[in-house]
Length: 97
Image (cartoon, rainbow, N blue to C red):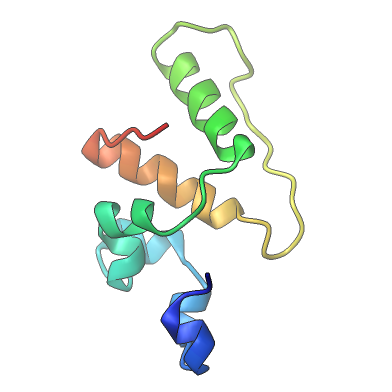
């Protein structure tokens, strides 16, 4: 089911366009800034689960995977959400399957 602000037509650009820099600076809308709110919203795709597993396996030296991950999706494909998810996990040790 779509979020209420989508159904009502009140989706602001701030909520639509996530910005990693604002999250890092602590100035993002709460839906992105607050880790619990952030992880309560998006659907965890196989892609983001794989990304998280590969990044943290590499960081914990449990895998010899690539040191660079290239996120390849079109505009609106979720790259910034992937980055925000990784940021929150690093900052808060929040891991969800």
